[in-house]
Length: 143
Image (tube, rainbow, N blue to C red; front, side, top):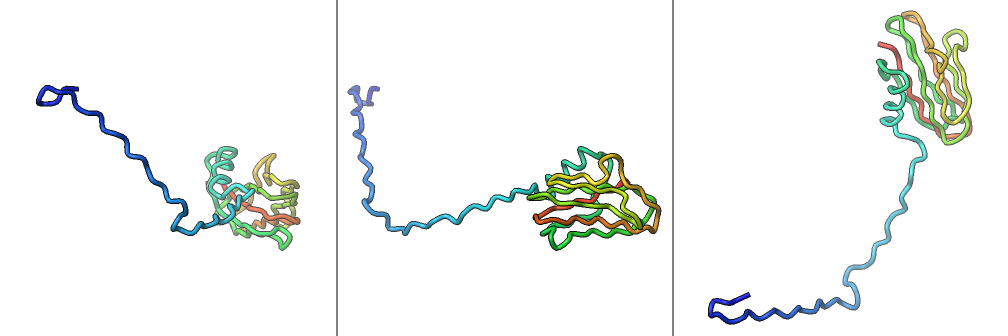
């Protein structure tokens, strides 16, 4: 490169970076990251909608299935339901009115997998999940 007076411009010398030998900031240990083995309700909702399109969520429950997870719903109109369950271990689940209409066992269950459980207006539906595991239950119904 040529300078204004016609001479070559000198190349600047790189300045060495000086680094402190000890940090003035105390080191902070990071908290352990806890990874939830269960999909979130948002993920479970998306998966369940892909398996049963055209439905809407009508109930959800999360907790230790040993204590018994329950969703109780009274149908406001004739409707059909399915329950989608994810658990950290094997659990058993049922959908019942006056009798058990669907059941299943495992760590990823669709209660009503062979077809939704349909009820009349005013009937009460009870979804129950039991087992030695933490679980999330999502109940979907037809419009």
